[in-house]
Length: 433
Image 1 (cartoon, rainbow, N blue to C red):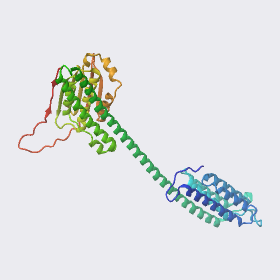
Image 2 (image 1 turned 120 degrees about the vertical axis):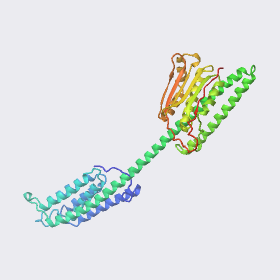
Image 3 (image 1 turned 135 degrees about the horizontal axis):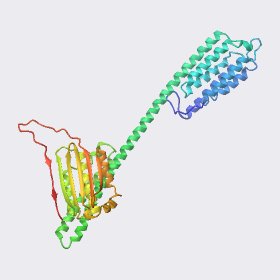
Image 4 (image 1 turned 90 degrees about the horizontal axis):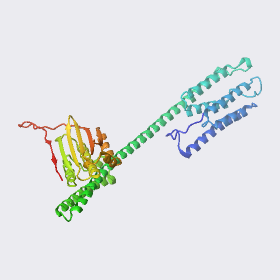
């Protein structure tokens, strides 16, 4: 059995080069102790058996079970060679160098990775010494008596308990170290996931800001160029819209860049540095879309204070992205219907366009490869809602989203007047151009 490397354990297993040098020094000291003990005996085979035991102990860390097997086999040969009638006997049994058996057992108990191996090693030593004390009369081998057996058993139990205590402490320390490494890996994974979520959120914000603003600005610039000589007033209005859209886009870009430079992924500061938009701003992007040539029919029917800032942001971004896609793929002259309402604790968003009369297949070809639909779907799914998008029958495109509303508990104060009903905002404007 090969000892597996488990890493440094405090106060039990020193780490680094010092641990290797110290371990080798201990192995050599144990081997020398066995060899010196064998040298004191005058038997013809005592020194040889002791030297072989000492040599085997040098490999006790890498092959503890093999070393114990070899040492016990040599002890058996020592026992069989023992002849009390001879002077001196070929080998003495028991002898002081039999302490090699205890050292081998200690190595198995301390370094074993198999749960039952320490008990097997201790039981093997106790059974072997018990058999040796009884002897083998049928082979003419005498035992060494019960007194020596009790001494040897006492030593074996003491060594086994000490080694097992160290073994248990080592396993506990290793389990604590493994748990700490596991917790560190989990923390790193959480940080990576938070960073990935933050990157996805920033990517959605960048797409919403850049795509919508550029679409409006490009169409307004084209329109201004077309009427610059014939209708300077319309050209001036278009240029003002371009400037206002550009300023808003720059403000949003500054906030996103500030998050990238200073904000930590998943931190509160990163979220606080974002511009919070409300449903009221849907009318702003609708007006810009109208000025770019779209016919917009907008209806917002949501009670005041019914939505959280995150839900209002999601609704605004979906409507903004739908208008951007209509401008990009259908162009000016398309009609868009926007319905935002809250029913039974669910925010419903329905945006349809007629594609300016183009076939639905044309819209599919233009929109299938972009990131807008992916971003809208991610926003809705993060809010726990459902999202659908696809071509309409004939021409145009439709987007539908439903988001569960986390209704906020209204704060009421007691006044003499009756409690007012929630304020509902409705806007329905249709502008032809």
